[in-house]
Image (cartoon, rainbow, N blue to C red):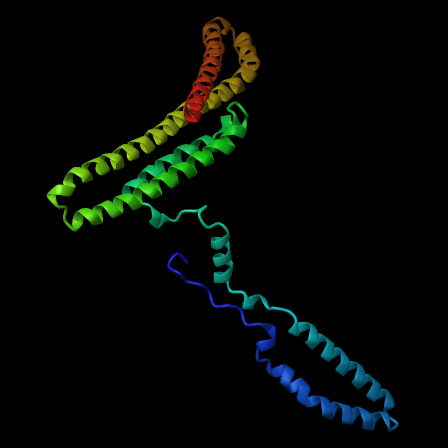
Length: 269
């Protein structure tokens, strides 16, 4: 489509060659003559039946002529129309060079890790802002990488043709602009990765806290067993340590979530 391809237009219903329509038209005089003979004879009821059947067939045929079959709208035209509608709002894999694809993959991996996390789903993070801001960050990073890829390609082609000494002084600032732009985009991606790292830490603490809570719910049964077996003194220290671990994990989770919020605020700046 970018190269100018347009799918062939659908054939209008009035221009379609339909052999059944021609056959129906040719049979009309024969059917009328037969109905006249039947209705003039003792078989008049059969004539009325034939007339009703023929009228029904004609009506069905008229209705089918006005319809556009599904196979008359090929899939290519649907894709073409969608591409025209969203023109300028999507990017394709070929819009990125190798380095840009690697950077974009890092950003998408970090964003996916945050959005798929349990702490985000449970509302421990700002899930609503994540759902809006992170895809916006992904699009902005992809847009900048696509533009950077195009400029790098043009620059390589220019250099490949040979640079005169007088032009070399102008080329160097352009190369620095490309390098600095890439560094700025990579810094955005690294900020996303730091945010995803804080979220991963909170995720680990979240799951560990859940496991500890499950164990704490079973403590009465263990305490009862220790008391009945006379080994309760031996198990007191371990049980107390389990409770302390739960408190530590709770504080770790809160600290991790707070760190994730700080990283999120850095992304907004």
